[in-house]
Image 1 (tube, rainbow, N blue to C red):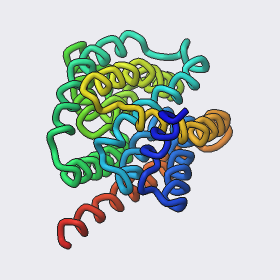
Image 2: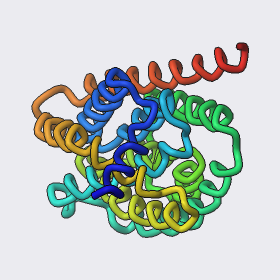
Image 3: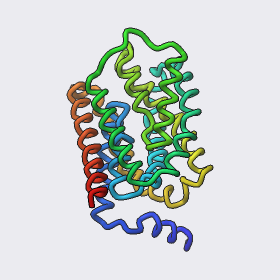
Length: 261
């Protein structure tokens, strides 16, 4: 059991009870949004955890938690996903993830934090505008969406803003868009985990942190999924995007303050 105690100590090293409570609360809120809308968890998880941990340590945690919450939600959306477009998106994403992971290992922590903050704010603003496509994209266009999503997945640990934008603007029913986003993540997450483990980013400390945060994630996801259809989806979506922009702005201010000091 000594190895388990050592792993637990390494996982929470330097984290005060207040920091741990902050992480659990952030995980719960983001998972609730994810359960309700089908997206948004990593857009909140990554900038929130990056305030207290290096981004290179945050990325494998989000991969593991994305896998857990996606598996939790998948049975309820399996029949509704748009599988034809998902095949091309996965093809592009699988090619982009290793390139992004190589970049995050090489870049300084604050540079990565800044990239995370800008990505979150930009994604939230684009989702807010909500421009609609008149038709789904051709296979080269759909594959390109996946490629950019894969680069962002590996580079900043946020698996999917381009995919979210694509499905939320495509001429598809909201339940089909939500199901497709969840299905995309349930396949991408284990692939990203394997890549991260191969290059040494996903270690025992990351696994222990993910396990410690998992109860808050599953609780938030379950509550969000049960709230879907019971409240005004557009109003809930707007509040989710406001939360994303606020979190991204807070992380960006942290980076700017650190650079100025």
